Image (cartoon, rainbow, N blue to C red):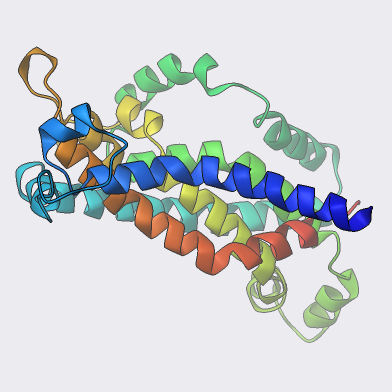
Length: 276
């Protein structure tokens, strides 16, 4: 009976996996087709009749400034992730070790921020970003820090609670300042959670469309998601070939990154799931 259940579960999850992967396969096939055949035969494999090789990829790179968009996306992703990891790990360590009403309130606010739907603040955020001059890639990093702090602080707090405080006390007895204790003792022990939070935040920022679209000055700065959105001509004409090529070039790095680092996500989540 257990064997039958195992086989059924395997079949079920195989079907679910195929359903999730199929859109990527369809996009990959269409990225090598002529534009007219993408609309007429979207689910057929490329043939000698509709195959165009790398023409769609070349057009996406040259015509739509895809490389420039990749540069801004990489800058925003790396900068946002580094800022979230440094600030939120220090905040979580302080909240966990300094037990006061203020730190408890900060923790509750960080956790509560994950509950608030983004749609409730998106219009106010756009106006605030313009008035404060945050409509640049550098200002967007601060906005990502605010929206990513909830999950990061929650996971870091869970892990810091599992670190014996005696280790930190021993470092301070040896003459370490609180800052040096954090970076020399606590951070190396937080490596699994740092990696897992970094992966989750990187995937979110890389694929995000709304925040850059609402805050950035689109005439000067465009991310990959915005470039894809603006691949439209007059009268609603859409360059499907270039869009498919851009989607593949945008998705493949994230897939490879996730496959290489997925074990760290499991370790980090498990390490952060500690009751305080």
